[in-house]
Amino acid sequence: MQFPEFSGKGPTLCSTVDPDMFLPDPLVAGSLARANEAKKICAKCPYIKECLEYAIEHNEDGVWGGTSRNERRKIKAERNRLKYEAYQLSLQQRPPVVSFPQA
Image (cartoon, rainbow, N blue to C red; front, side):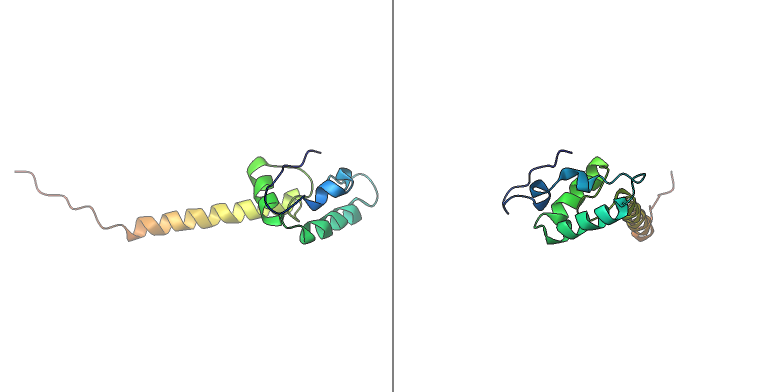
C-alpha cells in the first residue's frame, strides 16, 4: 500500500506502522479488529482530513482518514445529495425569464 505524502505537519502516522493494517482482508479472522486499530491510528494523525479527501477523490480501498471504503461511499453519496439539493434550490430562486411579445 502506497500512502500519499502530505506536507507541513510531519510524517503521517500510517507510514510508521505495518501498511497491511490499513487493508484488512474481510475473509481473514480478526480483520475487523485490524480495521478498528487502523482507525484509532488515523484518529491521532494530523492529516486525517487530507487523507479522507484523498481517499474519496481516488476511490481508495481500505482504511483512509479514519474511514472504511463503505463509510466513504456514504459520505460521497451524502455530499452528492446535498449538491443536488443546492442545485435544485438555486433553480427555484432564479428570477423568471421575461419574454416580450413579438411585433
